[in-house]
Structure formats: C-alpha cells, structure tokens
Image (cartoon, rainbow, N blue to C red; front, side, top):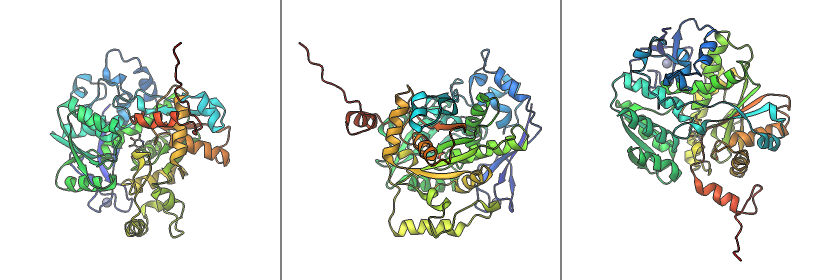
Length: 447
Ligand SMILES: *Cc1c(COP(=O)(O)O)cnc(C)c1O
Ligand SMILES: [Zn+2]
C-alpha cells in the first residue's frame, strides 16, 4: 500500500500546504505543521498489524513503530516492498516501540482503582530508555530521506539520548543543546556515550530550544517535537494501546506534559482513527503538569486573567499566551521541578496540544514533586521502572479518582514515558524513612 502525504498548517483558516521534501517546522504564517495523508485506510489493516507481531525475520515488523507503517507512511513507500523500505526506514534493529499496557496490581491499589481497569504502558523499555525513540525513528527517517548529514535538538535529556543513539547507528551527526546543570547525569552520559556534539546553554530548556529554533531558521535539521515527522512515530504509542484493547478505546489516557509533543501526537492519532471510522469512542486525555512548571495548567484552567485558553477552532488567543510569557519574564518566574523532563515553561506545541484536548474533551491537572516521587516508588514495587516525570500520571490518576472525575469502572491508561536515569533520586527516596515507600538498607552484623 502506498500513501501520498504532505505538510499542512494546523490552523484551519490558513491550511497552507507544503511538500514533504521541504525542511521546515513552521508555516509561513508562523504556526506548526501537520502531516496529512491521502488514502483509504481500511480497518482490515489491524489484522496485518497483529500478524506482524510474528516478525518472520523482518525487523520492521518487530518494531512497534514500523509495524504500523501504513499509518505513518509519509515517504510514499510500498509498505509490502521490504527491499525498498528497508533502505529508508530508520530502526534500531526493530527494538523501538515494543511496549503495551500492563496491569500493575500495587499501583492500581495505590490509585484506588480495580486492577483490571487501570493500566500503564512502560515506554522506558525503548532502546534508549524513553518514548522518544518512537519519534526519533520516524524523524530521522525524514532527515535521511532529505540527505541530511547532521540533526540538532534541545533536550532535557531523553531527546538527546535518543537522537544520539539513533544518529550514531545511522552515521548521521547529532548536535545537542542542553540546559547547563539541569539534566540528569544518566541522560547526559548517553549523549557522551553515543558521541554527540554537546553544547551546554546557560538557562533552562526553553532557552536551549530557542537556540535550536534559531539554528533551524538557518537551515539546521531540528529533531525536537516541532518536527511533525517525529510526532508521526509517537502516534504508535496510541496504536499499541488500542491494539491491546482490540481497538476499543479506554475512557482515559493520562500522560505528563512537557513540550506537548505526546499530547499533539496522541490527539492526531485519535482524530485520524475517528475520521476513518476505526473507533467510535473518543478517550478523554489528561495532561499533567508539575506544579513547579504549570504554564499549561494555569492557562487551560483560566487561572491567568480568568480566561481559559482554548483551541477555539484554530483561533487561539495568541495575545493571552504572550502576555503570560511576558508576565513570567517580568516576575522572573522560572519553571522549577525535580522532574526535569517536564521542567518546561513554554511548551512549543501548545496549539496542537489545545487541539488534542479540545477533540478529546481533555483536562489539565498538576501534581507535586513529592507525589511524583511516591509514584516512582510504587511503580518500582510492581517491578517496573519509571522516572519522576513519568510518575506524574500515577499521581494524577490517584487525584482524579479521589475527586470522582475518574470513576472506578472507567478504563484508564497511564503512559510511563521513560525509565529512571537519575539513580540518586530513588536511592535518596528509599533511604529516607520519612517517605511513604521508604525501604532503607539495614546493616548486617556478622557474628
Ligand atoms: C520528553 C519527556 C516528557 C515530555 O513529553 P512531551 O511530549 O514533550 O510533553 C515526559 N517524560 C519524559 C520521561 C520525557 O522524556
Ligand atoms: Zn499557516
């Protein structure tokens, strides 16, 4: 099956189109771009997707991203022609996206839900340790298609780890810009290990991203989530959830909010499947901010100037966003949370994120650093690994169940976005007997 694709401005009143061979992450009007497909997507493809779980030696069937290649086929490859697509698709030997939802009994008890109704998808099982591999594999595929020799990104750690790993594997140079002193050593060490060129930027992630966006305007290939081809790969996180539930959507999908790449990609996946008639029900999204970096929570819930920020058919209140950012600058308010992956004050995908919450009747909430730490520990006691930002979904589900917004007979899926790379976090947490899930090491006395 071949599919024609183009880029298109996300704002309906503009809708300007661009060829996918262009290197750009913005419309001429300044807004973000979507990948749009022309084609008939039959739900019969679900059988093919499932069948590919027996990969028969094909790494692109093993890959939880490329297994769904018909739905992310922006390069117009024949999805059945292995000899052709194996030259272009970027995969880490089929290892990315091999995840699915799991029941986690102890976490279910902790959030006060029946075990069969709450699930978590551990994206930390990806080869570089976070969901980012889903999107880097497709983003780098586009870069390779354009013959790009170097890709750049700003990162709180996981994007750079993933880009560095995949780029090294493909013989492409990775250059990364990180906020100095604000990323976990375990993540930075991956960029070193995979031989990326590393620049430390004074300031926070938002400042590092600004540097990268400027480089992009001068021709660099950007691998941050403003890259619409990266988001195509992240849609497969949703496909794997739906496949697990026989393509019957759950009631809720819950995830942490950083730059809103996931919120954007997940919403696009749901909008497309709904349009093609594959799903009848629309799951409600919960986007979770860290309380110390709660730009979106505040704006969405009308806590700034009493004006809830909404998609509004694409006519987003830009002035309100700019006014809030000016206020942050003026008051010198910096995002501050120990969950560094979501320490982001100016989510670049904010408009796509609004569109996703609009379509899914979504909500935005916030959780504290302490609640996320407890979440990491309870996920650990179920034999799974996740970092602090990822545990935002555990804390949020607990809160929403208590507030009776999520009902006990609802079906809920939380996305555990990455594996724990900040070893000191859990050592300190478990060693401190004041913590709810403390488990300090005991001294063994030899007799
Ligand atoms: C990147 C990242 C996030 C933020 O995701 P967005 O798509 O930017 O909102 C959350 N958790 C982890 C572990 C991450 O690496
Ligand atoms: Zn436009």
